[in-house]
Amino acid sequence: MLPENITAILARNETWTGEAATEPYEAGWAREAVLFVRALRTPVGRQPEAVIEISPDGMRWLPEGSTLTMPAEKDGLAVARITHFGNWLRLRTQMPDGAATTVLVTLHLKA
Image (cartoon, rainbow, N blue to C red; front, side, top):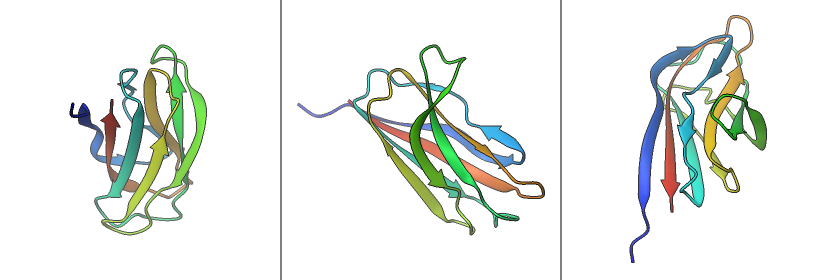
């Protein structure tokens, strides 16, 4: 039997400044997840760490424990592999003053 897979786009062509987060995604059916962040334009300023967050209801969030460093160059990629995440996932970061990046964030899930 072939595994069930899906790719979800959580943020597309969004410019992140200040506090930024993806849309939440309900992924309780999946056994594993891989999250990719791609910089669509050259980022401005120092790029921070981003944290994977989990939620029981898609409204209240806790850090899952995985982090990634936001890409520092155009077309740069960052990745996080996630397991044991319950039902809801998202990516959140706090951009430093004057920093910005335009992102494509995709979530790849496998049952």
